[in-house]
Length: 161
Image (cartoon, rainbow, N blue to C red; front, top):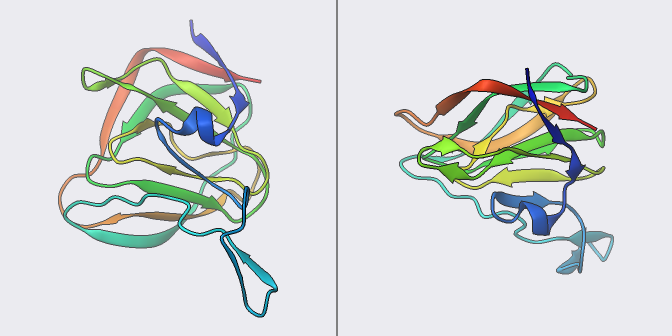
């Protein structure tokens, strides 16, 4: 038995309680490089404790729908941003905190050109690209000490279109 979660489009408004949608949308903050480059400035609130920001590259295997969601994680010491190297969609799963455990998950699907930044301590699913090669730049906390909490669901969820 699983509980179904229907994918919804990723919008800045719907995602705001969990983090930031990173995209070239809305008003351009300024043009640079002799007017040939639009700068969309400061699109994510990075937040790190006891460490520093680092950029890593993740490569994940592609997932197929429906996706089984049996675990969520969070990072109490830092935010975590995912910036895809392709314009292929990926799935973003988040949940509110309910007494130290994730509440009912919400699943989003990205549009081309969107990335996300999870706020520090936000419950989220694993990196879930829908297409290969599943390459992402990830900006997160580099430091010592534990920065990962996992929660395994007794009854898994099934993410559907």
